[in-house]
Length: 283
Ligand code: C5P
Image 1 (cartoon, rainbow, N blue to C red):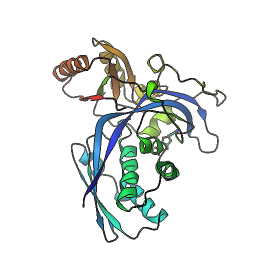
Image 2 (image 1 turned 90 degrees about the vertical axis):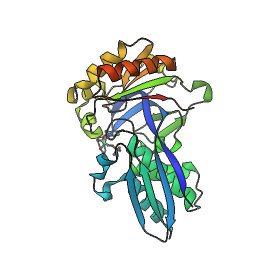
Image 3 (image 1 turned 120 degrees about the vertical axis):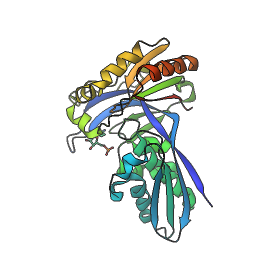
């Protein structure tokens, strides 16, 4: 029997850098993370022991180039098998709709979806809190993607606090990517974090007037980002325009879905070479 799981694209509505961890150079941050209805799909059937993965979809070729050993879905599956002493295997199929190396957490979302899916398929039935340390060992953003709900993310990504429903942001987003991939580690390496003395405010900042502290470094590496942000800011009904994660995707936030749709139509006519998607925030 085939089971499936959706891997929703992750969006950082704000991302504040608070310093750098001395031990490993990872950055301490405070971020508001939400998920959108743009998603990859992971499907699986059980095998007698082996693990394999086939990749389809618009962005399949961007990850097919990577060696299988570095693929986060296969690494997640190997980890689950070993950690829970599972004898069964899995034939996995990934449909890739989220652009790769784009700041939308696609690889992390796929890995998190693999953990949730195999947890069900192999009847491990562990609570998400038990899977969270495994998720963190796969990448900083994988714990957030494991919960896949509006949350505040702190530490280097391992401190997760889901938002109460009354704080869930809503609205429609226009996502734009210049079709240039950007490596997270390159953007972090180029940013200038403050000394690790700031303690995040206890209250949730108002995300619309907050910022993404990776924006400047990302623009230095990929100047198209500045052009995208400028274009978005000029659109009628766009209330905020910001970089997603480490980029190069940017989002424009619209209260009214029709205005996001109209902006996307103008974009298709004016900038046909940019990838774009109109997507709603998930509750
Ligand atoms: O954890 P992950 O492999 O996704 O991170 C990719 C790179 O991003 C790391 O090698 C590190 O350079 C950088 N990073 C960071 N601080 C974080 C998360 C990631 O410096 N909190």
